[in-house]
Image (cartoon, rainbow, N blue to C red):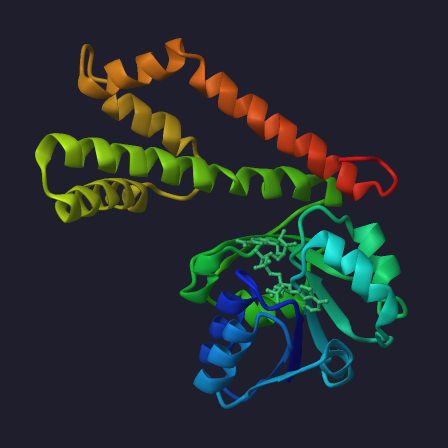
Length: 261
Ligand SMILES: NC(=O)c1ccc[n+]([C@@H]2O[C@H](COP(=O)([O-])OP(=O)(O)OC[C@H]3O[C@@H](n4cnc5c(N)ncnc54)[C@H](OP(=O)(O)O)[C@@H]3O)[C@@H](O)[C@H]2O)c1
């Protein structure tokens, strides 16, 4: 199996590491940018090699597009794809119709949303359209969630942005705890274990488990009830919803070339 990556940055690296772990015989070609990353990967794995973008395409049956949208628009028209090449795009901000034009004569690309923890598995992977090759490469360890239209991918990309908001909240809590209770390492271990333990215990079956958890936590006059009320009163949940709407508008613009996101 020959797999190529155009763009080898923050998201390509964990994908490559996952592939190297699960498919030690696959040959993986990386485009020669982000030198520190590509050097690290080619030193770590004997089946990873590095070359220019056209060289990556020429030797790959499967191509992962992991470029920023602006770079993809700039460089893909100058590259030659082949009919029959299987293309997986992980790019936000550029819709499938535009990707299809840029990779012709290759056809039927799919779009999915890996996150860095794909390296160790357990990553949800919304995809449109359904892709057999994505299932083969990443379906063993991750949850593939097929979508019924490309329009449904935008809100999934938008929802990933909750992660930075959550991290900022956790870091704020860590700093606050440290300032009151002293030990910086203990503060981080406590906050990380509190949240990952609680989330880990939630069933992921789509049956309103967040609502159930909030009920479990909402002792009348309790600490969770007070802090959540404080957030609600400050309008912070509304702020979050408005922010997600803003991302959705931006991403809907990206699915219809010509509209400004
Ligand atoms: N990061 C995430 O968690 C994540 C998750 C899901 C989807 N995505 C999507 O994945 C895409 C990449 O994101 P990223 O976070 O990985 O960004 P990134 O770290 O900036 O990676 C982009 C890569 O493209 C390379 N590049 C730039 N110009 C190039 C060229 N002319 N030829 C070949 N490679 C070139 C960059 O190399 P240099 O460093 O040398 O410029 C870099 O390695 C984006 O469309 C993003 O929306 C990201």
